[in-house]
Amino acid sequence: MKFLDQAKVYVRSGNGGAGCVSFRREAYVEYGGPDGGDGGKGGDVWVEAVDGLNTLIDYRYKQHFKADTGQHGMGKNRTGAGGEDVVLLVPAGTQILDEDKEEILADLTEVGQRVLLARGGDGGKGNARYKSSTNQAPRKSTPGFPGEERWVWLRLKLIADVGLVGLPNAGKSTFLSVVSRAHPKIAAYPFTTLYPHLGVVDLGPGSRFIVADIPGLIEGAHEGAGIGDRFLGHIERCASLIHLVDGTQEDVAAAYATVRGELEAYGAGLDTKTEILALNKIDAMSEDDIAEKVAALEAVSGRKVMRISGVAGTGIKEICGKAWDVVLENRRIEAAREAQAGEDGWTP
Image 1: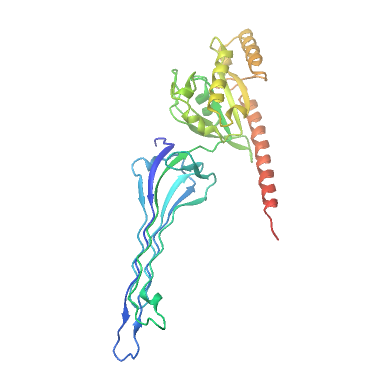
Image 2 (image 1 turned 90 degrees about the vertical axis):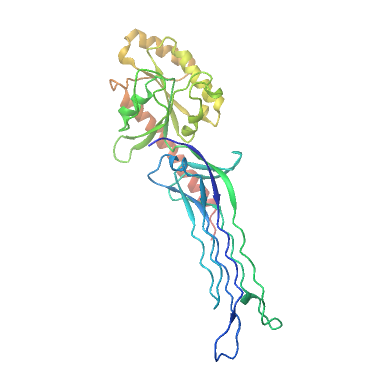
């Protein structure tokens, strides 16, 4: 399945059905009168977050979604049936933006959330609605109200607990394949990762978190260099970032500074997230080389540097445990915030 994280779609709700002009005419019935029914309501257009999806590929080949028109009213005071709704199924983490991409209309972060995109038009009134003591035979009815139409953007931001960042060939895909059952493409050339991958890290009962691997960043990514920084949106929701630096390159400090510069240029709070810095590929380095490059990284970053090897499995459990501690603390903060919001909104 191809990965698609943005799609522009056109939605239109159904028009309301027209009201009916009708009179009761039956043999041997002394009094007739108006009996035209109302029109049915037009169908709505909804967006719902569902489980089992992680891409917007369904909206690549179909971009127009129109709900049904309500049926017209009929005689004998029969109201027309309402039009069927249209439901757009999207992955959790999908944002809905207006046509200009300037306003976020909704952010579906949990499975089961539903948002009304376009409300169907109300049905028109039949002539039975207009009868009165002074107008006993009205011939008036109203048409149904028109539905709503709009263009919107669907933008997916994957929901993950930890994001992997680094230069191309820093070993991010190898790391993801080792800590989870994901199978990203791994090769000895840059930009083997062309779109984000997700993996679930299982440290034991109740200790699971999701890791997102995005394409590597190079200098000028925020200006479109390489694959650009478009996929950085998929780690905006992460509690922490694991920054992998290839230890086999000459200047590890410059590599670290390049990625940090792109995170700061992108914004959205990525540069303020908790960062776990690791020197990768230590299996291909000597002890003196490892010590020298760890010292260089600690000097430029101001934080402790972990030593790992995705291929050999060195330090993998330690870095996953550290990431889990950050994820757990973030979940506690979120739970406390939700509890506080519930208390503030409580009414007897």
